[in-house]
Length: 393
Image (tube, rainbow, N blue to C red; front, side):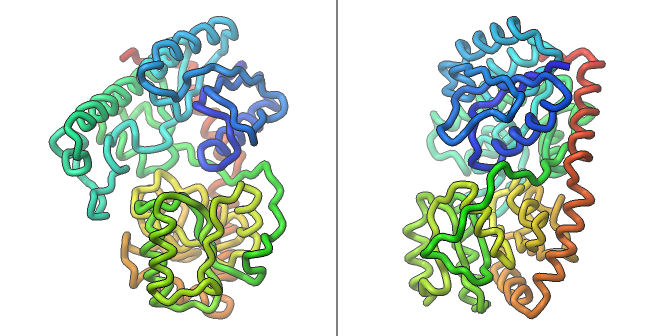
């Protein structure tokens, strides 16, 4: 079978990019696999056996989507794949072109096909439970012109998804959101990602602690909740150092907050942005990983990757996190509950507790997120798509 994967970019930075590489790498051993991407970042190369086709405009601006859709159609006409699978390409014109080129599957990786705002998160940090609409989303969209544009774009993305034979999501949470957005539940399939890394870990950086540490990583923005982690850290005062890996517009404010809370640089280290091998190196020395996200994580692959390495996770109960985090092998605390997170940090500091839960976490990850199991679910989804004509939008 000839599979064509379509993605906005080729990168090894993490998240959806790593998941795509993992899928393509494993499928290349059994099938002919082609990969169409809008751009290739300097740190990236296709997996062995995967044909790379640069297709400018994929994942780009909406005004260039008609040209990107035409290029994709021309590529499909030339390659004649048996099945097209798009990932993270959200231009409605390109989505519709993909759905009409061949039996097609779409993976929805985030909220942008059903939420025009902050990822189902209200401005005050509480989860949004309203069905997306111009009226309901007004609280998150201050500019009327932008609100009109993004609400319409979100609606057209959801409409384009209806043209795919199957739509893959990463978690039960995402499945529920798409059902609420009007997609046919019979065409939705939950296929979780599996832990996978193409890079060897970097050696420890000279300015970061060598001893066991607590790790939190991600883009430093308000929705990721690092400010709540700092509050909980000041409340719990664990003995281990905290390393926050990542960069973003909230970094200066977070550093100032740490100083105001009396957390000196021996206790809290801001490592800045690190390439994936650098994060892997920190993970190898971590006793606990903390995910304090406020926004509804579509899945939270970083947490599962930690568990697969025997590192337990403390996280807020948001989005798809509960698909892979259980109280018996980690700490699943109510969203935005600083006191509960502080209690989790304290418990993880007790002798042997993190190690015991880490062992249970590794066993759970190996059993429930085995690559062969996840790939079998995806293969079954492909078989269904090939056997059933797509539903035209």
